[in-house]
Amino acid sequence: MKFIQLSSAISALTAVLSTSPAWGQFTYTTLDVPGATDTIAFGIDGNNIVGRYTDSGGSFHGFLFDGTTFLTLDDPSAVTGPGLGTIAQGIRGNTIVGMYYPSPSWGEPYGFEYNWTTNNWQTLIPPGMAWGTAAHGVSGNNIVGYYADPYNYGSSTQFGLILSM
Image: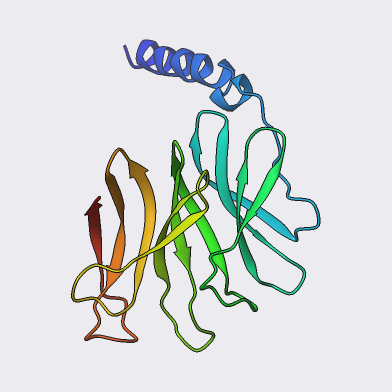
């Protein structure tokens, strides 16, 4: 009886190990903003992809890739420098959301909403918040992200956030 159980277990393990891994069933395409030291994609809607890339000076820049062309997205209020700049994180239709760093000495970002067809940037700061927001996704009239506790600067106290437009 023990031999039959062991034999069944070995047969089952052999079947699992001989199955092709799921990752082999996909096609991979590299996204690489020309001249960037790195490129990271965060959001997709149809053929449009958003993310951030790092330039040779270490600054972050958001991007929109439409399947052919990369468009750089820099919030007009963002400062640049190593580890600073603009990061696009979500897209839905004409709306792109993300975060930017408003000051080199400020540790927390501001969230933004950007309409790329009208070139309209809007900073997202909920009532009662002075700083520390980020937008990560958008669907319909809702934006999700986080905010940091303004009375607990320097800590990791962050809370989920839904903004309704």
